[in-house]
Image (cartoon, rainbow, N blue to C red; front, top):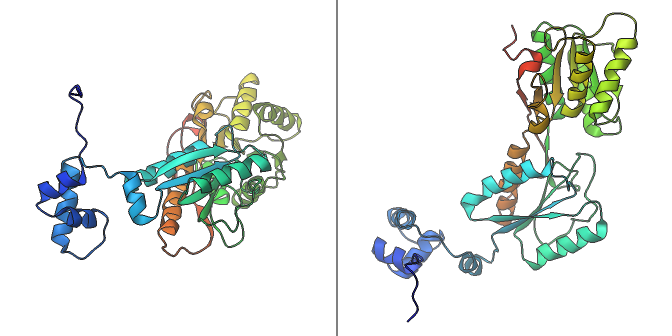
Length: 340
């Protein structure tokens, strides 16, 4: 006789039915929200199932509903800077629905992208979420006309698709208005390459909010560019900025280092705000960096719920959904609420 070593017995639908005092057929219908029965009976079966630790078998659920209860996440952000927070949000949104998420990284290789898409379809995923490393570029693979719903998050979608993205203009406005309410009057903007849509959107919002005639400094997404931009600004004649709004946290960190080398105190002499809330950079900046969080986890959560709704046949209006950003206040601009 096989010795199970005291292994815990798996709770089955038979156990749920017995504990709830109903037939196996009734228990199954109650848990799958099918069939006709009273609300009290349905809720009692669900409550009993939860109390005794019943976990429905995914394969069995799939056979009943014609679904696999899996979602594919496709990305060319192989570093994971943007994709990992999005995936965390997707997983958090879907775990309570019994849906699993698996990630496929395609770099910028169209052939690899097609292989992964075909593999997802072979696994009969209920839907696909496409995400990437910038808002104004599509993934290098055609996701139109697939037999499953596709939702886009932090990447450019196809016409008539559902696309989620951060509201860069609103985030930039948050940063500039915070600096203005803190009493700063001469705000400079150091940012990334002008060909990026997000760069232009943030720069336009900065100019509108600051009312500044100061030219925007465009460069690379790097600490070295932030450092060089400070050298460029301080070579100019005239008054110097009393605040910096930077296009990302790396640029901001380089700028803070360059200011320190000149004996300029942050935030006493110059306040600094970044963009991205990249924890590994923002928290390790000295002083810790105030920055705009793009709420990528929430973006992923909304994308996950939407692809689930589409997979279940619920109507979803196509279009671009902009999610608001959030300002994370640390010590680089004083670390306190500005005066109104």
